[in-house]
Image (tube, helix red, strand yellow):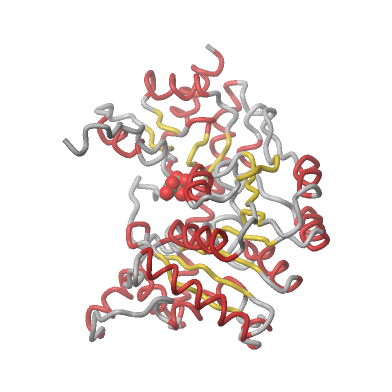
Length: 398
Ligand code: LMR
């Protein structure tokens, strides 16, 4: 038998929760697992701007032929503007190229292969902790993966530890930074701290890779791009992975891009030739539908302003849920202990709840969250905040 030596591996710790939650028959269950936004009805609906764009595409799209290795140029140009700012001098200087990818994860895989093949000997540095898929993707492509401290056992941002370690990173290595809404912790850097990171990156000649999966979910679409734009303006070369999964609600359509800035248009063409070659061997052509929807929205003033409103609605709802959860925990004597939840940004919170408590929350209260106490705040049902707070109190105090 050919398959006889194949062993079973454990399921994905985040995606596995989708099934476990679905199979739980308790009607009072809570889904704080996978990073998916839910509205006040508990539904992950399709944004209205996306629906309208899809209708337009259904009426006007004439072909489903291949779109080429870098994807649809209009999508790449519009997304680059969204990320770097419409007035970015880099765009005018033709120093920016976007390669459409199957989601932000596809962009990460593409950039991992690119580093492994085109920057031989260079390692990559990830925050500790980081999104688990960062670890596995860069390990699978054969890169040397190292870590800089980010959030310690005291559940606080360890900026001094981060800066100290970055000062020791070998020249030329790649440093992965989260643009905003850090996954899994929700702790973001201040502007001043970003400046400090930039100074080290510049003086040690490091290559930043900025993962930008939650634009619009932190402080706003423009505000969240602050660090990306700071780095793009200050450094000749930059790698950015951008995702449209959350802010456009396009999760399963797998829509994202790897955006590269290079010293000049000629060098950019060299880099892009390599990316096209790698992409051809990974997925040949990227999927089109989600990117076509995004291009339709960003390229149309009316659809764009509707979408901007919808992203803002989602952002504000998450911010209110953060405050609401802390308020619900306060009468239970836990307000101070969990005050950081209101200060964190984006979908996720490192709550400080231990693995053992996460297991008890799941088994005794049907509250599903990822290990290390990561809660998807965007999945909370606002009408049951008190019930959630009581469940947390039961495992944290008992
Ligand atoms: C998450 O971290 O929950 C999301 O980014 C979804 C995923 O693919 O893991």
